[in-house]
Image (tube, rainbow over the protein chains, first blue to last red):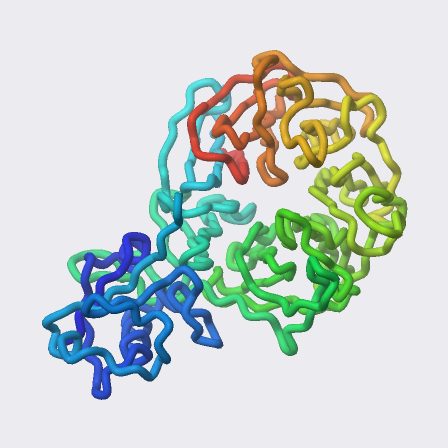
Length: 98
Length: 388
């Protein structure tokens, strides 16, 4: 099971708790996790990455095992700790500043 | 006795304010969608319990929400309330897909280059006058979308962007379709206004559109003051019994047309300043109109710090200040284009919200005002429903 942590507003939108668990077939890439997340929670389509282009929205960040994976290609495989479920994949709303 | 329901969109959520026909004692519910920018909420004239809402965020994009019980509960269209109930329940539908039709095209950018259309958000939702499942949505970057399945799917009425859209150019506030007026006597006729695009009309249900800007003059905003497109129209309004008569608050100037936009005439008259955003028409008096003058395009607050609604009972030119109950010193709020509405009671109620978080009500056509609430987030939009 892949554990995914969503930001506050997306948790409310999808009406889920802080963390959701997803079945994702290998290889477990950023894209595969997002595909699985949006497939299970269709209301999140367009909120993390754009419709059509599937580009990450500008103020969304992806963290895993203390690394920022936001700028990595979508085909990048996630760390073994995320694949095993030991660590979560974090979807984060970027800091607004101030 | 009739009831009044106000739908208030703010920078940090939506609020629903209700009262009986006396419009004196109000109940406040909200924030709904706390923390999200709520650009606009509007109820269906065909089913007042059906309310559409535009929920948006710089982080997470655009969501459409819908209530079928007058704002008590909400769902993204395509999802049912039952799906979200109980442990593990969550909405199954998607609702936020707004995709431009065909070749996305380009419009003028700030630096004069051609810039591709990019969807940002929905500024305004206008439900059909007769079908609760049909509604129109005005988008930034400027385009018009339509749903016929209650908001589950949206399709662009792409003919609008064939009306010289290569010459539309965003202003500082963005380039959005902010006003959509449906002609109650002619279902094929729709008017839209676009920030820094102008004003347009279709007579074939949205297939083809033409600019209706003859008579508009923008010498400080456009190199050609009489240009066909590009005028910064802030708001247009009509009375349902006289849909060929439109009133306009432009960037500068208040105008009217008596022939469905074929020719406009300035009616700013004795206003202290003719800059402003909202304009609306008294429900019982088709020639009584309201504006809120703002100092200038550089100073977005009332002249002299005095919040004044101006009323013309002659369809323009002759204006009177309405001040009773409104702050007459140290007031530096703005009233945005979608933040004024009128009810349909015998003594017409006028409502407006401010960027300072106040929502004011007049239950007597503007003669006197009371603040319903004073400390909401900045108010983006106010709509009113008159309920039996």
